[in-house]
Image (tube, rainbow, N blue to C red; front, side, top):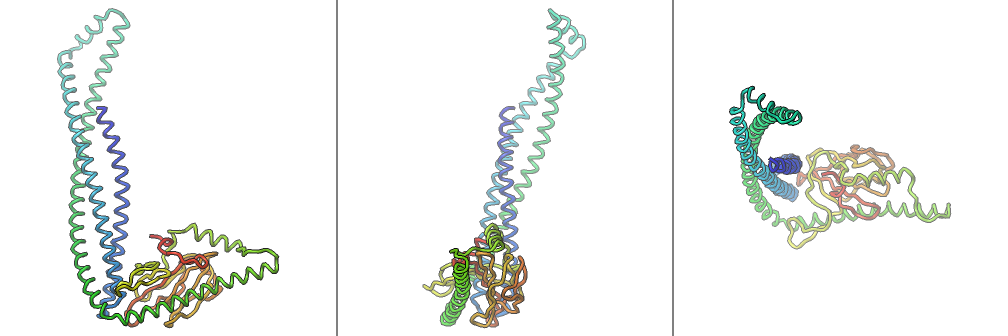
Length: 399
């Protein structure tokens, strides 16, 4: 029985640990499924435009990435359930073994009790004692023996109930595992279809090299303009420092208490900032990487591109003060919001609803995201800076 108790404790701890892991995997799978539903919706909208577009291709790439992650998650869930099944099988085998042992022990006690079941035998057993102390011990023995038999019978029933419970759970886990394997096959089939579609789209898009090169140059102009505007803000702060130094004789820029608080709060919310759109998927990442279509061409993104539905609105990711609202190359607007030392940049906006100097709150609407007439794409370009240092927004927004 001691081995049974040790095994039970070990398996219980394993189940608790794996149970937490399984819950996390299921939450992650649910979130990934929601993202896949959203990218599917974006692709359905994009299909209204029969042309093969770069944004449509990027959304498809994101769809493939999400579905690959989903399959990986399903594999992890299957593995955890497999461990559950092994553990419960081991526990059921151990319980059956202990139950057999208990039954044999209990049967021996019953046989012994039947041979000595008369009250006369019990009385004789007590009266034949050599001393009062021995008689007392024999009375206590008979009492404890009766209680022990009762506890053994209760333990046998408890183990039977536990085996029944574990067998039911085992069957449930095997059913769940089979369901997951079927889901994995469906997702793998869909992934293969999407990869074939991806190959066709790429072949079609690669025939438009000059068009993409032109758009790349246009985007580089926009990025340069955004960088210049941010540099203007930094330069203005430097001028403030110089002017204040002349007036006070102190060197170095000191933030106001409000600015210090804004910086501290912003930094404390790293990886927890809300998205700058209510719903969207990242279709272009931060930093230098290969162009999705053009061979041997690298592109640089100072932030991330977030694809969303037509008519979607951009919102501030944190409370702050609007530093700039200006028109960028191509006709749409950009908004820069200061949060102490940090700046957030939202570009490709129309119908801007804020102005320079205005205080904004977290998730406050700042404008509608523009939709490209040719590509029918609705993309917010979002950046985060710490003074003049570019940061990866994916390190800051919630996941």
